[in-house]
Length: 172
Ligand code: AMP
Image (tube, rainbow, N blue to C red):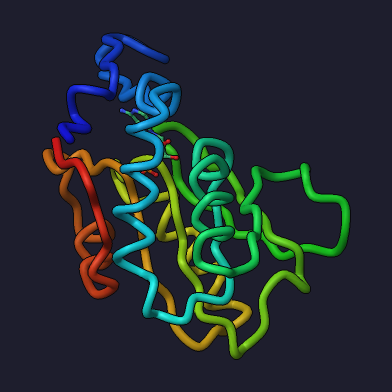
């Protein structure tokens, strides 16, 4: 199945010059949704994943499916100020200014095998922030999964993610 054809490209969204990869056109197609999640599940079925971390907000959609299919728990990684209980935070740099993501302090434990999932990898800034968050807790091992990678964006911190051998279905 050609997933690239199923992902809509919206020019100049949310700002001029950004080519937005809109996965809603893939998600609404029941065969594509099943195919996409099956491909990722296949890759991680034997990894004994205990927790899937979905990154807000598009990482929540398949993240929940993956957790269910891998018989793992689901942990939401949320933007600052959304989680109700005691949490740990990690700030990261955006093009202009900084942002922060959070997980609940009791969301992970040292024996967890973690799969971090998001819809898309661009600069790698968000994923590196999640990695830092997870490392603050300390877990047994970490895997990475994305539907898409903007391969034309390269930088040293994105390069460092190669150590985790990220699983990617569509490269631009
Ligand atoms: P980054 O931190 O630069 O790797 O950006 C990844 C995050 O931003 C992901 O959560 C994506 O959903 C979102 N994102 C960045 N660029 C795009 C894009 N061109 N199309 C869709 N989502 C994007």
